[in-house]
Length: 186
Image (cartoon, rainbow, N blue to C red; front, side, top):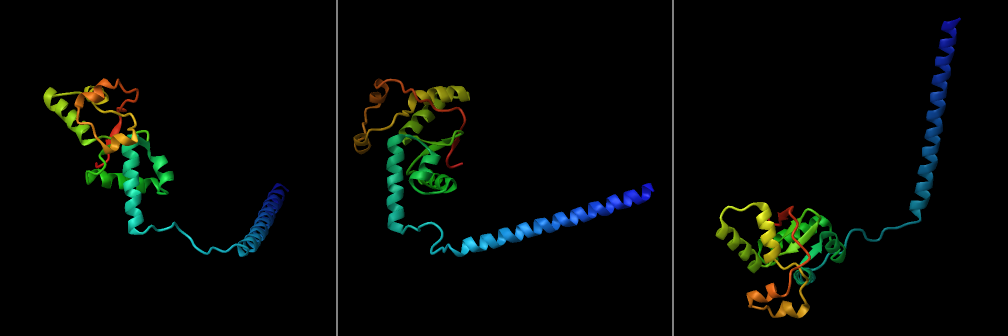
């Protein structure tokens, strides 16, 4: 008697599983038909992103350089939106500009690019040479003193001030270099 009940339960379970499979197949078929109906109503005339010609690319790069030099610190995400690029493309472009010397800087662990002028890098390098052996904390502290992270006024970009003490007299910057940074051209 028990054997027969087990067999009936097993048979009932198999029938239910088959019924469920059939029900799911019908739902999938219905969804596929609905998808095909809707997709027939839409046409894609062009796909992908607009390709810029070489002149437009060059102009965009020059604009990006000027923008970053003026702002000093810029979020990578802002650049992706502003220049309609993927984050990886922005990072590659920043690496390329850093390696060519056109836009030196570094990317911090928060996804920000920090533009550092050649003069500021030379000042940090001089500090390290002068002190010899230094800790990361010493470099960060000195970098916060030597590197001006305040945005540059647009007229300052055109005429650079050769007076080294002018930046120091302007007051301490509230913005500080983070301790976790990655050189762009690494």
